[in-house]
Image 1 (cartoon, helix red, strand yellow):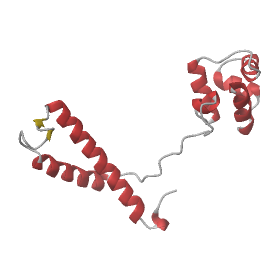
Image 2: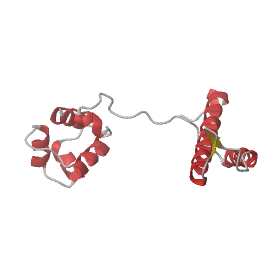
Image 3: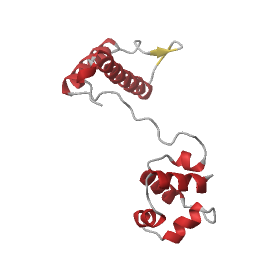
Image 4: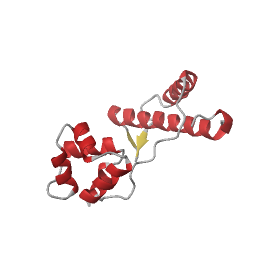
Length: 144
């Protein structure tokens, strides 16, 4: 599976075995051995191959048929968005102050768990802001 997918991905990128070997800092014979199944690249070299060929290591190894994971198309948050998130998070933290505000099964949460919950809340606020920006930004202003 690896040998076949490696050859196909190399050809799609319009690279010769020699071109790929130069990028990997190895020999054409080594690349040929990989493509013919005579040898297998190390994990580090496999990662380099995937990066050069713009595919995932899982694709090369036959674990998935997806060549590349889809990139996130969520908008980037600007400084105003960051301030809004910080304000909302601060308000939530103030509401949760006190020993009895955060509890699970009747037991108050320890400081470590409390920090994890707050980190998750912040992450959700960021995601909500990004989804709202994506949904409510007119298409002509969206960056591709």
